[in-house]
Length: 502
Image 1 (cartoon, helix red, strand yellow):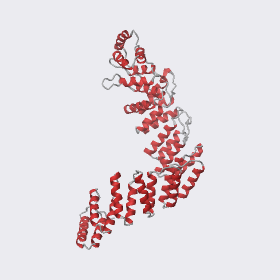
Image 2: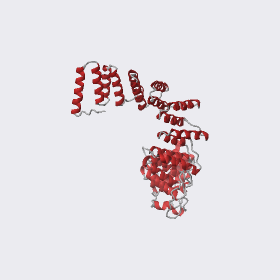
Image 3: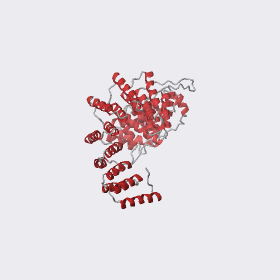
Image 4: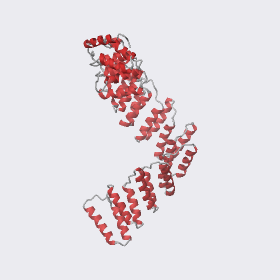
């Protein structure tokens, strides 16, 4: 610690009491930002008069131990710092970004805040953290900033402080991604356009994130328009009559995002068109690209095209993964070609790729579809051994298949176990299959218990349920109960009790 520190403290307090407030300058409009350069001349910015106390603060921050420095700083600045002071101090220690961050956090002490930070001080520390590759910290502060100020205001201030802080363009990637995460998509698009108008293209992963978010929120075709704009494919001409030229080209992830978006929106013809566009950029499809197009063919039940694509993928040395195998297995199960599904399942195992929950579910449904219930039960039991959780549709298909083979008690056990093991919630149809099967087997008491459970789940008895019980009691020769149920059903229909006539 310097020997003259006590005198420094006394002088500092006097200087603090006469220090001028943070100077305010009128921000330049965003239109100016669109056509100016990050490397603008110093005359473009209003000079900030330095506070003579700042060198002393910098000395304390850099020379004293952590526990000592904060106490001295509180003595020097009992009333806190202006955002201008904070920015100037931070710039002088910007090569120690962790210290800048601790200084920022210290000024935000919840019990005694020492700085009412504004966009200038936020932009300064964001730049310092970004230039030092402290991504998560910079990203977090940008997220805080856009919750307080409009994203375009944050962008404007980041541009103004860019050169002074010695920052790097990827700081704007963080801003764009923070906007996307906050669902401020329009702001993200505006910022990207401003950057492109300066001849600066956002990072490729940022562009892909923007395309994905636009597709998710506004539809595949809107995302496609942004794709064409971001990569300079729309041929737009701007005020300076200069054609916008992007500095990056789309990659396979870009095309995958586009293909997936169009597939999810049902625009299958565009999936193939995007696939064809990859060749224009000398971009080689990866296994996920193949999966999306194969899934499109499987959805249309054109398995011959899916097989051709599979063979092409293998010929080009692209190794299939679990998703690729599941895509083909699911496609063959859908069309009832279980021999082919079994063949791909066998190849999957021989390739050392573990089957997944999706693999087993597709096989269960496929076997149920063609009536091979024993095979479906075997796969289902294998799922349980692997601690997989079947989706409701798979369990319902298995229940229906077992009931169709008069294995009602087995189906009932499947349902009850699924409810206990992983919270399966039977739908109305599952109850109908089981109640009909129990009544046909003369197990009316068990069927009544199940019907009570069904009502307890909020399902109303329909005409099919009534008809099943009426037939069951008539088989037993209990015409009295059968007649009572018939009258109850008619009364319920007349009273509008919501009986479903299925």
